Length: 128
Image 1: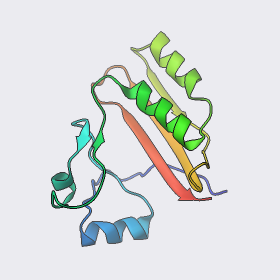
Image 2: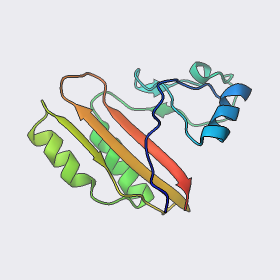
Image 3: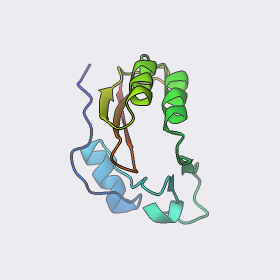
Image 4: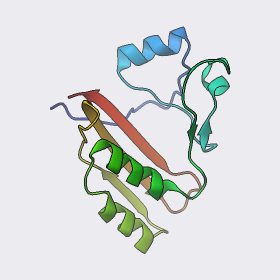
């Protein structure tokens, strides 16, 4: 199993022809989720394009992690959640072991910094 690591660049991608080519080449995607949603037009897609909305209501980061754990077969998120709740002012970084339920490997890289408004969940996907 290859090591899953987060995208190291800071370039946000569009889902246009050029962006898709970069995704296929680099095998990673980085989208701007700072507004708690990814709107189709923000990634270069017309409103008529098929695709689910990606929305993370403010303050519901634990529900997102728990949802990923339940749907993807990822284990051990509760220790991280309890640590963040016990010390919300601190930094907490944790990479959950991959889940294989959807037929490919999915890993969560959880990064919480109590001094910042925006928190980060990096989702890595690779062939299993």
